[in-house]
Amino acid sequence: MNSTAVSVIIAAIMIGGAIVLIGGSSTSNQPVANVHNVSMEQGKQVVELRAKGGFAPRTSSAKSGVPTVLRLNTDGTFDCSSSVRIPSLGISKILPATGTTEIDLGAQPKGTLSGTCGMGMYPFEIVFGA
Image (cartoon, rainbow, N blue to C red; front, side, top):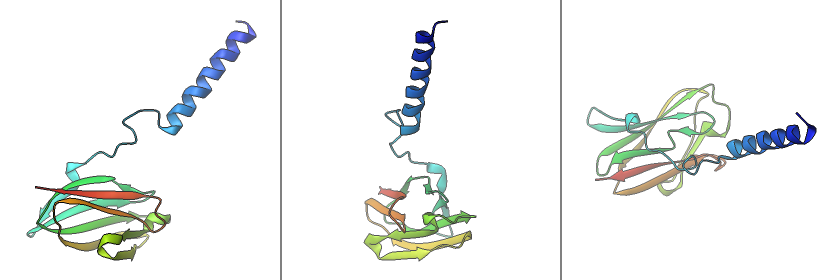
């Protein structure tokens, strides 16, 4: 194989790797609702998120008009997702490095409730529907 062919192959690999790192898939940047993180417990809707390196899942679907609790689970969380903010409700909490924190959200109307880490780097949202 000549040096030109090798150079082209190496350039293609590097460009492909850069596209993967940036998120080249058109759907990769779209939040995906995870229906398995919302449950009913003792008459309350519980939305459960993992807080470490961001919040997962990033988008949750819940029912509007139902008393709702946000349950945040941490496990060795030392980044900025160890702090949560929900500006529209005036909520700002520091989470333990490891443990569970519950935040009462009340019965939310139809719409999207947005939250973030303390620095605003890691967003999450709960879409309240019918």
